[in-house]
Image (cartoon, rainbow, N blue to C red; front, side, top):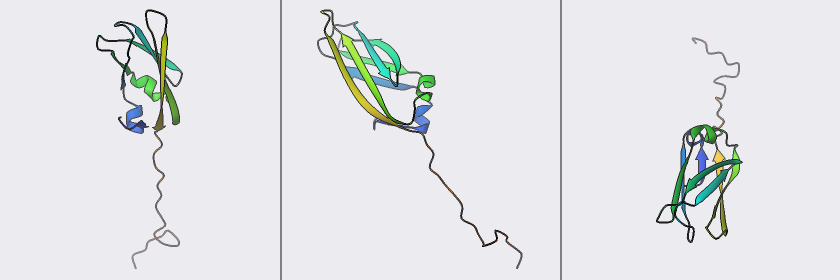
Length: 109
């Protein structure tokens, strides 16, 4: 989404998360946790990583602040962690129509 806000439309679609790491070797596992759901991917040769959160998992996100955490462990056993908070806002705005007349009746007059 680019703005750290997941809208109702985005909540029902897959979401690609990307990041990078330094000092973690190519092929090391990156574990990403989003609202208690864990996903894994691997570090690429340039230090980047990417994973797509399935639409079904996105649909389970609660409205409000949601933490995303990522961790990777290098071959020496050192673990690096990071986190980011996003906002899920899938609530449609409230809307009403005011009465046209005092008695809600329109006559031919």
